[in-house]
Image 1 (tube, one colour):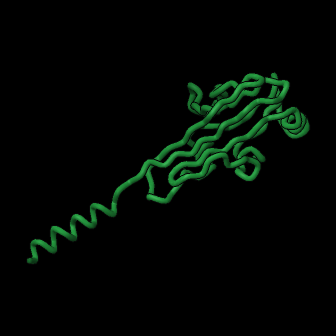
Image 2: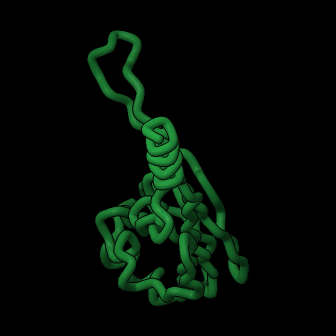
Amino acid sequence: MKKFISILTGLLCVACMTDYSLTTEVEYKNNSSHDILFLSVRQSLSADQQTIIETEEVIATLPKDETYTFHASYTGSKDGYVPFYYIAVANRIAWIQFGDSKKIGFPNSKYGSETIYEIAVEQKRYRKYTYTFTDADYQFALENGTK
């Protein structure tokens, strides 16, 4: 009997440790008059190892009238979801560039906050956010961005 209870307890413990795949997506649509670039920043040491060199890399290009979707997934609880900020972390998004030169920092700007996004789909273990860029976003970049 003790053996049966030990086996049953072990099975219950294993059943409670099931991991679920969680996914969040953010779909961007470009309704502005400018191409939009999503950039990451790669850091490396100089040859003499005295200076940190930062190099920007294009993650995705969003031409006018196109859409692009970023994904982030990991394992978690049955009723969990991937937090919004993890999109930036998982995809290494550091900047959004409007047109040829004006950039807005992603994590520390309005684009890094889920409050400006619309939740298009919300299910167990899955969320999809959407955001549509307009010329107002370009104007925001002109007023608040860096070259």
